[in-house]
Length: 450
View: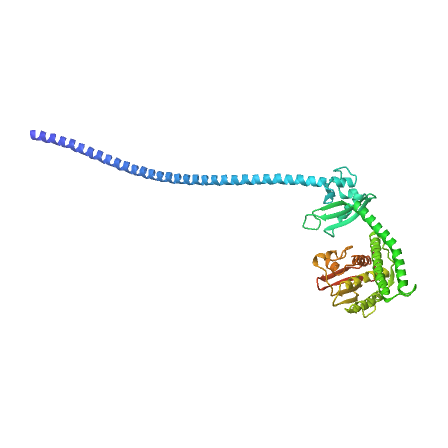
């Protein structure tokens, strides 16, 4: 019985121990599972923390890069700001310079001795005080007005010239009243097309110059007229003495009289040149236009001239049209004078070689062309523009031939152009000169005579 009770007691204890062991194993398993779960959670958290650290590191690097970029941009902005400030300073400086230049220009325009007008699209945008004085207008009165508002007035006659589109620079003289003569120069300004940017009108008072020129011309005319009578008397007296009409003379006396006669002839020629020049400038070089055979006129001058050329030991050649040519309306005396002046000029400055004269008629332009070519000294390039100027003689010509008035070609040019012709030349210093002039046929001649 005792054994049974002991056995039962042992069994109970065993069961209790077993239960305790089982609970402990269960608890250990639960703890183990919890630990494993905690480890998994810790692993997850650790990985999350690693990822967060990596993200934080990436973001930090990104922020640092952005910061560096911002700092770089800030530096660039500072440089740009500095550059812009420099530009603004330069612009401001240039603006001040432009304003200073504008002020200086306005002062110059306001005090300019000549009248100045600026016209844009038919509207007057500038009219300086001197221009206002010329036309008796209040200062600023004309500015902003249209050109056509002055039609019929002296200013309107000048402004009409601004409508001419056929040339870049236009010059003309205008008499405003008896006491005011203006030289008007119109210059196209700006724009790709002719005058599209407007016109600058310059009004120069030439009244004093014209008065002086008129007085000078009148003096020359009076002096020349006064000289003609005694020179003609001297010529007649010398001719009588040289001809022995007042008694016999020796050969030496005759030679002296002949030399004096030639000098007197040169003086008469100079007086005639002065008179012709005065008449040209006064507009009194009147023409007697009659139909003439121009070839005959040229022959009557050129053939005797050829003999003079040959007397000087020079070669001479004359070519003229083989066929008949139409007659022309000319002042025979004046056109003969022009031809003679051209030929004489060629002979004076040709010492070797020869002279060739050619006359042709071209049916297409219906005009004659006279050509005079010589092998003389020629004209330097720098003096060629002045060759038709009054009283001008080339420096080489003065050295070679001390006598001469410098009026021959001036007179010839005016005569030719008055007949509607053109005159020009080609020259090379040391090789000679070729002078040309045309004369229109068909009744066109003489239209430019005053």
